[in-house]
Image 1: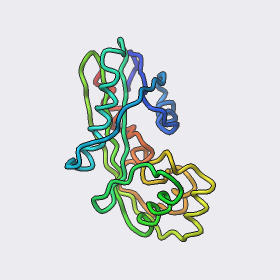
Image 2: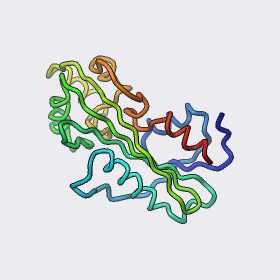
Image 3: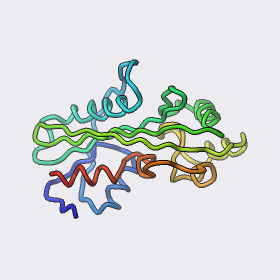
Length: 189
């Protein structure tokens, strides 16, 4: 069993990541820095997620004292297209329309920075959506917050309850932090 011996900094404003770390009974504080999340066009989805997580970690290099800094980035890949956070309601509608009745992949890259070293990994989950009606998509966009989520949806939200037929892989990965792999990585410290 992992016994936390070092302070942890979560470098993420995601309430889902904060909930997941709390559910893991980890003591952490949240620190934020603005980071450019652009990436080279030739990268594969898993590499994009890790690349951005490492860019976020680099912003904390030398600032974390004796703490482990956890950074992460989640992306949705559909037919080789990266679906990031939607810019507006129409963009969210377009994304959810693409995902309707199909399957897609969710990748989360995670970096753990400590004592000048960086340990990075990723997880991949296959998500299968039922067909969504225009009314269901509109209801979700109007009543939930798809704008801070890759692919314009949160699996833990209403849409996850009615649209996700099945997943292959980690549920928490789709939420934004593969807790199973994170636990194993933290156990090495």
